[in-house]
Image 1: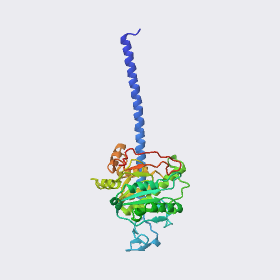
Image 2 (image 1 turned 30 degrees about the vertical axis):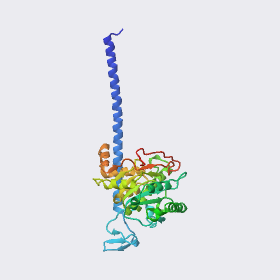
Image 3 (image 1 turned 90 degrees about the vertical axis):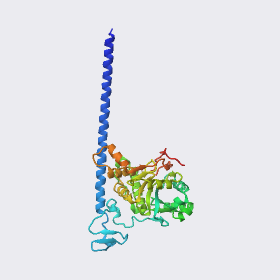
Image 4 (image 1 turned 120 degrees about the vertical axis):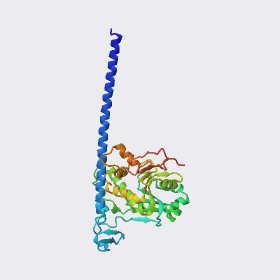
Length: 371
């Protein structure tokens, strides 16, 4: 039989071996984590580089106006007869048709196919709501009812709600316009609501899109169109107010949400913010200054095939504050400097059937307080 001392030595040796094995496992996991972090940093650095390259291209080629649309100004500059905007004859400025080339020879493609508006501008808050025809349910009227019922008269006077009916079928578009006009007659007549739809020519051919992220074509087409929808409604809203709030057509709001948003945005001691989050879900409740919406519009158009919208905004944030080579933690800290999170959330997702056919969306924002 082994002596007590021998047993103790064996037990100690076993414990040491176990500790060494555990240490080896931890070291292996640490190496894997470091490798994954390195890959993430390299990917983000690549994304930032791509964004900067495309931004430079867009900036360098805007406004190569056609001669027929221009008149001389001072010998070096011209003015576009359609828009009245000054164009430099010496500089090639960025143009949307560099990333959507099918628009180049179609001057009407960026004009609304339908528009019902009282012409309200100069508001404090523009709320953008894209809507499409869903297979199994429609939540738009419920969303509008919630928004309007949770606004008082003063808040309504400071707000414009833009409903963007992102469909090519004129019968469906007209039915939405008629329904809104009938259900919200007083608010519509007061100019609280604009209803617009795009020209079918705005959208490119989507039959041969690259399968980004290995997704099926249906999903790639859905998010590609979604990015272009967001870009269109942002372009429409830019000159109509001070702030732009992105919502979806299947949300409900808390009481006094307009005053809460305006007060919180105006009350920022540091005005160097790019986006304020009034919801924790997806692209819901994102507030931008209209003076800076160009960053989002350009990026949504440049990367409309490449990334989902909520990833595009992350890439915009990183391209603004994250230099190549900094750590993930440093980048996240830098992004917090130009973002704000409002709590509790002012909007709740309530739609079950997604605008992507066959998708069921059950996500809920646990911080939402209806008030």
